[in-house]
Image (cartoon, rainbow, N blue to C red; front, side):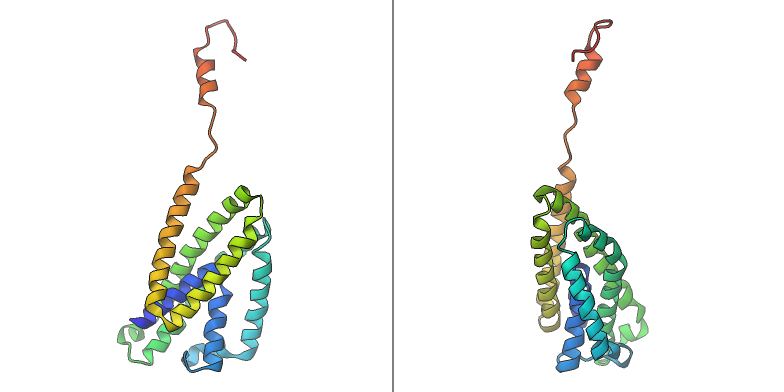
Length: 211
């Protein structure tokens, strides 16, 4: 059960930034005993793999803080973030099999499906909100929101490993807040000009428009 909560937290973090949870899991597996990876995911702790992920992380940090470029980056990340979510969820669930999880041993695909789905849902909400943030702040809000997202991804990743119950609660709160933000953004649409249309329709025949 705790492994599933860990996977949930890591997948949520991957929806915000694909590379932070990969780095957290890989570095902890490489340098400490807090994360144990089975043989099929041992590559996550390889030094060269971590170096490549680190370079991609630095590129993501820069690109995601530039207005307009951040939206293009989100399009590219539509494939990357869910994939990262699938990897980290599957890695933690595969590690749980070492502790005797019979269900996951019989259904190894479940970790991939859940991780991809969770990360994709978070990514979609993030990508939908960013253009509205840029438009309402003239682009000034992009680096601020991006920094908060990176911090949230790091905090969620660490909590998922060390305090999985807290990570699950934080993921639920994030989902609720994101849902409310999306609803509010949908309601904020430019007002039309219904009065003008009514005046045209009700103008006397032959009198022309009232402009």
